[in-house]
Image (cartoon, rainbow, N blue to C red; front, side):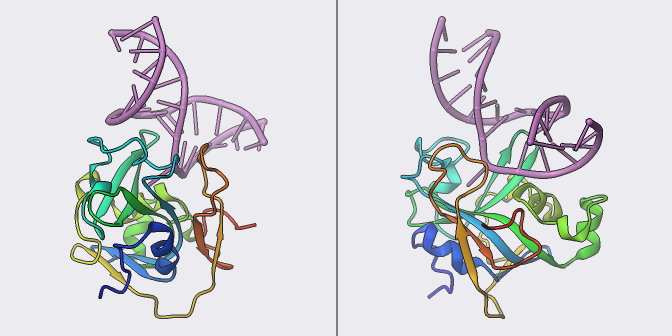
Length: 184
DNA sequence: CGAACGATTAGCT
DNA sequence: GCTAATCGTTCGA
């Protein structure tokens, strides 16, 4: 049994990812903030049904879904539920731990606290590209291993959406200074 | 075919 | 707190 059980609902998988170590080519860190999205969720890219852009969300669980945000940023998701469903978890922030120099170089002048504090920043720091879509998240060049520490997970409304804005599907590591925003 | 709109961020007030 | 940057997708004429 895979420790993260990506075949289950995204809102069940999402809190399990808090504390896990995510890397791409050895660069990354501890996941401190995520959001869940589902097919029956008006805020989700998969809500209108399969399209060329969101095709990976309807593929096998445990794979990567990358999308372009605001025409500028690459954002990283892990596909959940059974193939054909259309659910996933957006990785919103990491505590940077591995490949610090590569992340600092990619992120230019950003302070360490801001290296991976937001989905676009995670994409830039790890070197996420559209071509990563469809790859398994727990095999090279990616790496994902369960948390080696006990974590306290908090939750709240998702950020930056207009529909289903009250659904508490944002999850974070309590008290982390590497969040994109504080939880209330 | 034109227009509007983001699962955002950086920089300035 | 406010807004420009920037572009693929979606929607109305």
